[in-house]
Image (cartoon, rainbow, N blue to C red; front, top):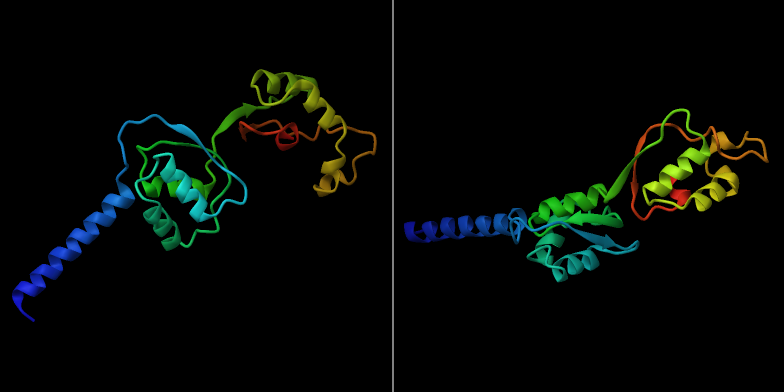
Length: 180
């Protein structure tokens, strides 16, 4: 092999590696504001990549798909609403969607609050209407079969006392049932 041919191969490899780095780790634009990007339930890798490209959030749907496929996470992309910007790289966006790092609202349920206090708080946070929350918590039929600890709950009792005081992150589109 000649010295010139080897030099050309090395230069080609360096250019190729640089191009891959540019595509995967450098964002399309710097300093752009974040916007809400929604992934519908049942969307696949190709759908998500096309939608990201169409909205100008990534440079290449091929490289997005390639990155996710290389990580073997093509089946781990989670539906939801995400805060994403074109100042994020393909790797940052992909990892956010793989983790399911959805846009949410921080809520804190204070110890000692009753269901009315919680309902008022959730309405103030624009998460759930008081009536909807109270109706759901007072008719917990759908929850009894889902959680073992509710099987011993008296038949006519609501879920007051079963809601643990703590800080939670909930989706902005969460229903009263999702919050409970």
